[in-house]
Image (cartoon, rainbow, N blue to C red; front, side, top):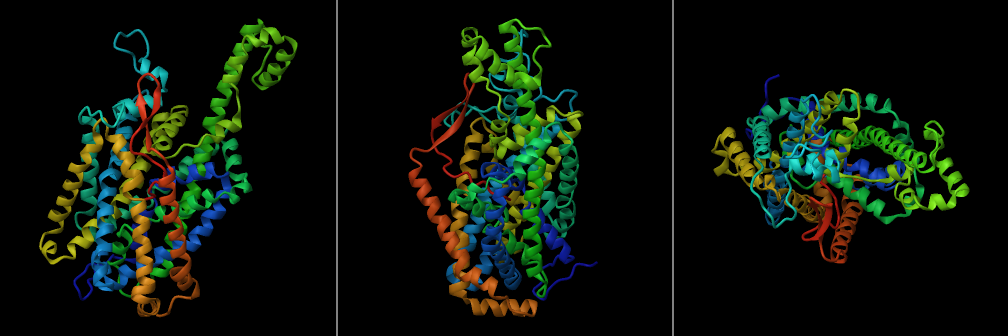
Length: 567
């Protein structure tokens, strides 16, 4: 179908499906895979779905609808759209662009890591499965032995991390090349605006679901997967009384949908005037939340596999300790009877058992405790998953699939992130004189050069700072001003008429109550929580890598609230 143009000369999506897929590709990102499962684990498994879905209705869906309506009505990027609403609100659009620049600087670094792991997956033995030999060739590297092979590969081989943020040992060449590749592909995806983006999203929005489905089938057939699934689907309802569960649900919805960056306004500005964005907002929001739940099922199956493996290894170590200490026959104690024998020997031979009591306490085997160990972010994506993958049959195949999926999720989100910068800037006459190819190239090169700082030995510490501060507190403020501006500066009645002009009917009472009362109050509450949490956080700290101790805390800039962006 030929691309149609509106009277203003602005290009349109080829079809409503392209727009929906672009929104799905943008909203469904790494946060769905590594943040939501962590929150489920932290807040009582399936019980977390209750506050999560309630917050979707009270906050996520109304704000998502609002941004799409603004973009489609004004047919401009964030700066132009908010300036049209009020000349005094142009700074709101500029704030969205600046926040998107911050996000782009470090977000593509994650894609560079995915490339690094993907390239290293094509080896007969995965490099994070075993420790490398030391320089004397007398045994494994000491640093790797103190940690684990997966931790060593991520912190030493991938990041070559320094022991503090003050120490900088230069750029990691391998990571820098992977970052250049990530930005080169991003450029190719957005080089011709919606014409190229509209084609790419057919793949970036759909292929990750195929991989997740394959992983689901593989995950539920893994030994011990049922333990993880039971953990997820056995809700701890007491967590509903925990205010932090509700706050985390609200922040997860907020960041997962990618509100406030200006990407949704930019995407919607390429819609035809009478496009049914209301149904599309509902569909994309439900797909986004459904993906989070789907990804959690896959993740908990792998959690169960890993936890069961650790639990059984612990039982085996305990079994050998009892056999050697009490000089028992090899087949005297089975894996199933280790705990029973521990109690029995403690009662029968208390003096002899006292000699190993400390080791027994240190090595206590508890499956529930293994499942309770919550990991998020890069720790989940690049360490926990890698740990599980190396223990699967044909680990190279599963590694390639997994990191290719991560790459597509990250690249899909980058389409929206970069569009949020390019679209509003090209609305200015001076910028519109440049060709799409040149302007997009300049933006990508600018972000690449600044992003190289994250490939230095101290880059991961700066990555943490950006991830926790660059696009969290500021976004809450941006979206709060957005909803207040629409409801009380532009006016709900005027906004209603605009929607009627586009859809043929006015929004019902649900949308109006959410925009005027509920969503602003929730955002104000989250805003206050962030401020109080920051003030009460004390001296900020961060986790630093130490060759001898593996990880130790050091004083520096910190992470009081780990609300990772969901895009």
